[in-house]
Length: 640
Ligand SMILES: Cc1ncc(C[n+]2csc(CCOP(=O)(O)OP(=O)(O)O)c2C)c(N)n1
Image 1 (cartoon, rainbow, N blue to C red):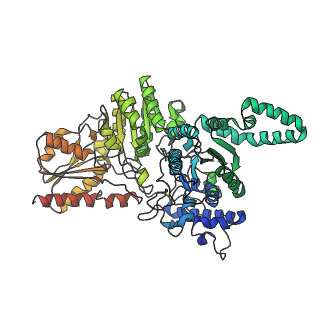
Image 2 (cartoon, rainbow, N blue to C red):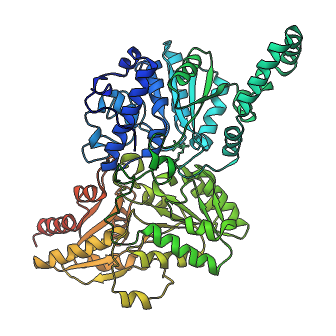
């Protein structure tokens, strides 16, 4: 547990109205501020859940940044933004901090809609350097002189977008500061060659050893050393290259000045390093060494668990068991893939830094040679899958809907145009609840349906997911399976399910309830509430047919034409309406010259903020009551 301060002493953080107030405090007082922020983060997130470990690890860095910066006009851009809780507390949101991640509360990520201190709507990794460079360049063009700082983690800096930005930052030579928060962790321990370099540095304290050695020798040798150093400077360009660690050379050679690694839990050291960087010309990088979960035992010991965690007991760190009574789609997928992989050695699983989140932990343990974690590199994950497929493997990319947005070009060209046998298992497709706008899986149906050669299946329950995966691996070709966060009941009787054929017929839906007044054409996660809606409608004397569409592409034309015969169609999908199956149904009806009354339910044309998934669904009319209500309204408009 975070060490508690004396209860009667007023908290310093309660008196901080603006980050400027930190400037009046000395380092000892700032240490107290850090402790109070930690206590607040643990107290609040133990009720709300959240990104605990990353935010705790970055407390001193954020406090030191605000003590040195002048926000605004200075701009602080957070990468991912899951480490920004201290920033929220210091920028006027302490009073509302207990509403973190709740409906109508404050977001778990920085967002300019919430505060002018949030430079950018963060959430997706590796974008901060591009945004910060843009801000710095705009500043230069305007002729003003504020500071621009990007705070980025050691995993996020390995993402392709960050590398593209580094490439230009070195060339532009614009004044900006990159604070690299290095804790050796992504969600799990970091992967990749860059992480390996950082790891060596942490293990060896190479920089400090070399620097101390050099200082000793200089002191001992007087003029001789200086002559030698002058000579080396003239041949190597910079004497720094003699003792800075190898990884630094990467940044230095891109013309980004690096500062020595600094203890990220030492306010004094952090402030000095940040100040020096701010006073420099051109781009600089401050390498900050932190511990994920710092200051809270349970998060320090199990940082992966406390990366993104639900409510927990603040004293023991014990996580409150989830109320979910069904296995999650993620769990079903992980087990099903393992079963398929035991039978077919060509199957390879790929994740982009989300092994646990996508259900691949057992796979990684049992089939390490066929498991690939590319780190936060979604574009690369899809491109790699294309190459693996061309080489005779059967790659399965397990990825969240929101992060596959990064790889859509690769889906179009490298997978679909190339007709590769790649299976995309698109998790968290639909609303994700507390993570809010940046993380909603709102767009995959739209961005996948537009792609030629792509087949898209949306399982309505775990058995359907198993069948879809089996079918995808047998049929090959570009194939996407999209499924939501959490779990749900089986939508068919167990007997029927158990004897059911595992191989699915492409483009064939199934009718789960017969009815003649209205046809509800539902996709994936919307099938179970549609069945419940049909029961509610039956109580009101309305006979509703429920069709599990199964396929978002190709759509089942026959079933759509048959549905039109009822005279009223409700389509339901957990995805933006634009480019979704509802519009696909409309297209089929137009082509067939049919014009039943129709209402399309799905996500509206706006971003959906944080709340529980159930609140989000019911707020948008995507629960049983909402679907039944829409069906009644539709029937009322046509005089039933
Ligand atoms: C494009 C993208 N892919 C994946 C994620 C999921 N994700 C959130 S945080 C995180 C790890 C970030 O690690 P690091 O940058 O080192 O920060 P730390 O959590 O260690 O502070 C990942 C993979 C994401 N937010 N964005």
